[in-house]
Amino acid sequence: MSSIPSVSFTATAKSHSYPLPSSPSLCLPSRTTLHLKLHNYASLHCSKTSFIHPITATKPSKSITRNLRSTTLTSISMSMEAGVGVMGTKLGMMSYFETNGKVIPVTIIGFREGNIVTQIKTEATDGYNAVQVGYRRVRDKKLTKPELGHLEKSGVIPLRHLQEFRLQSVEGFEPNQRLGFDELFKEGDLVDVSGTTIGKGFQGGIKRHHFKRGLMTHGSKSHRAIGSIGAGTTPGRVYKGKKMPGRMGGTKRKIRKLKIVKIDNELRLVMVTGAVPGKPGNLLRITPAKIVGKNIPKS
Image (cartoon, rainbow, N blue to C red; front, top):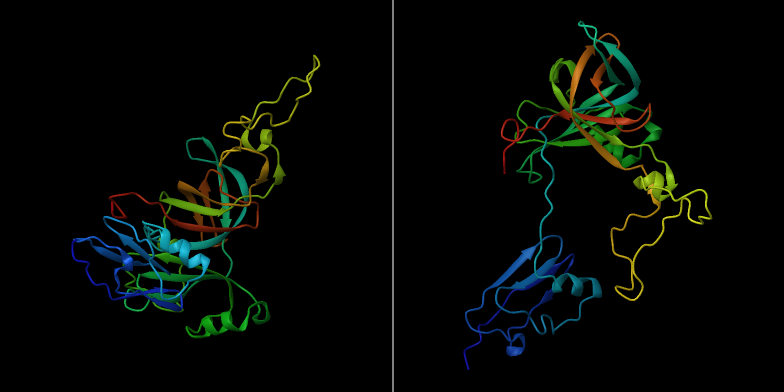
């Protein structure tokens, strides 16, 4: 019988620690590598075999046991922006006439007081580089004490919305710095605009997924019903992801590569081509358009 390697380390899950015994109960064969991956909780992964009894000294909770059973664990990384952006307010849509007479639909985005840098995050302090920006000034009583305390650290006025822009480098930014739209963008640039779509409530399959309705005459008893959603005995259930009636809208959407048509500094508004998510008064996030290999790395 091959020798059993000794194992002596601790798997940490949240705020609890569970020591692993260095006894033959682990049933590890020879030349077996043991890897420990941490991502908010511990996950044990054996390269050639699986544990029979990973923890015998202390009985963990069901949620921790579920996490320990997973063999692979992927870390979720934040999306990196091509540059720092700003926040604005959707005002509506109109037709814009170009110099050659062409008419194009545009969305008007206005800017209230704000777009001030509230925090600078670096790899040394937070593990990544990012710039936090605040938008839309409000009264003090509209914010909680933790929110006011966070803004007072940088000497920033009370702001309603805080959003983060993860960047490759944060050089040139400092707290309480005002970001002007005309300083970051110019006419003709491409931008990505994201916001929350209009919520339409609970809708049927025809409106939500563009299903075709049934016959309205000749004795048809299925007009706008969804119809069959699967077989009976096999598989005896409804597959996940089946298109069915449900809540429509009210989700975050991003419209990419919209062209800036006009910037008006006097009226504090900007016009971009096409439509953007949400109704008038909706909060929008405007960032430079991502072009892989040009302003963001390929990896």
